[in-house]
Length: 274
Image 1 (cartoon, helix red, strand yellow):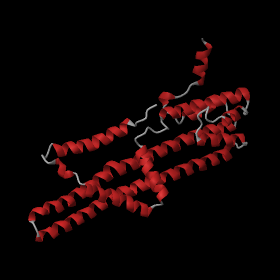
Image 2 (cartoon, rainbow, N blue to C red; image 1 turned 90 degrees about the horizontal axis):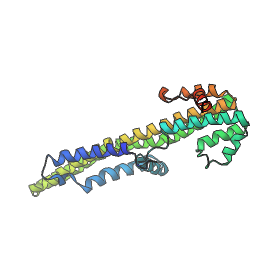
Image 3 (cartoon, rainbow, N blue to C red; image 1 turned 135 degrees about the vertical axis):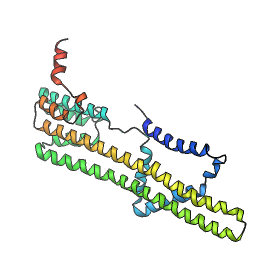
Image 4 (cartoon, rainbow, N blue to C red; image 1 turned 30 degrees about the vertical axis):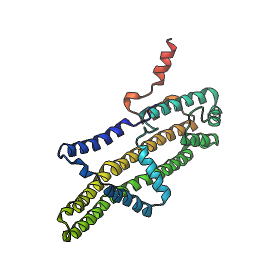
């Protein structure tokens, strides 16, 4: 199991690394681009405005999701492929031992690595739901999960819009400081002007290298989960109808890349030839 999303980490290092390199190669005084006051104004202002805009629960969930993009997502092409294989195996088990075989899996979810959606679907199957009625319930559950998770995407997009705005506020603060120093030592003008420009720079970078990419990443993850749950829904509906495993295979294969389609006939012939 991978504990770090290397593609996300590569993107972060590439973005900030190239930016830092361009500064370092262009000036002998690269430290002028470091400003605690500018960071405080952009990050603090963005976070504060977001807390005003949303309930704190959603804001802190979003912060967790922001750091969560550094961790590989639990749903991937490999896990979806495994889910299809599991449903096909359940179809064979139901055909050989009857529907009661699924109750054992529901009673031992940890042993079978069942997530909340799969447990909910198995519970509905055990309760006797079938066909369109089962599909409607699982569809509503899928959409509820999706809409709830999409709130975090909205919060991140809001933060991406706030960050440049607070960068501009920092610019105004810096200009006020610069103008105030006109009546004093002209040598202090640089301090106000630097604050003005650097704060805007921080706002733009924060929005375009952190908040916007994170929003798109979380949105992609939510859509992958939605796709996966839709696939499992179709599998459960056909299980409830006691569909032939080959028909179930063809239905689930329609969700997969043709390169990784299942072929139960080929597998059974392979086993029979041994």
